[in-house]
Image (cartoon, rainbow, N blue to C red; front, top):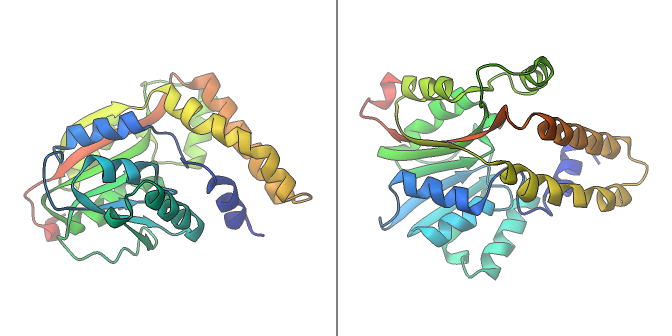
Length: 256
């Protein structure tokens, strides 16, 4: 089994594939101005097993297109949506972030919690803008420095893993440069990392290794995850996910 298949096997049993929380998704909804509107069409890109998708389906009068490239994630999402009576509001779509099939100007909102790094923040906000209707909403959570200065070890680690990590002010500069007007921002609290993501993930390590006994790749994946957890726990004051909510401005798509 290759690394992608192993990562899918580890994470598809999780409610979340990254830091987040239901309360934080609801807060982003409130900042977006989407509540109270009817007949919305929303794409949840990099949806994983549907933690944010299901909150959106409960909170909004919307049809949610949940997009991921891993079929195991989408299968788990569809099962959860059915169990919660939300199947009629949620459509799953297997696609890569750079190959989305949406029509220009067809979406009221694009959601992406902890996932845009897969394509890159700047590339994603630039490429996805054309899918939004005039005044459409972009809501994404993205790895963000919480302070202007940080320990060198932390900086070196995240720059090697994700060179686009930056402060919130820098991220908003990117959004404004690519045709968005900022509406709101907040940083995810520690519990979104520890209680909601890392602890459930750690509980999967032993059964995951048992399923893949003898796999050096599986052991390497667990070691990498454990190293990231330890780094976060040591330096949580310096880094988190920032949640960015912005609105497509009036500039024409061709001008961005």
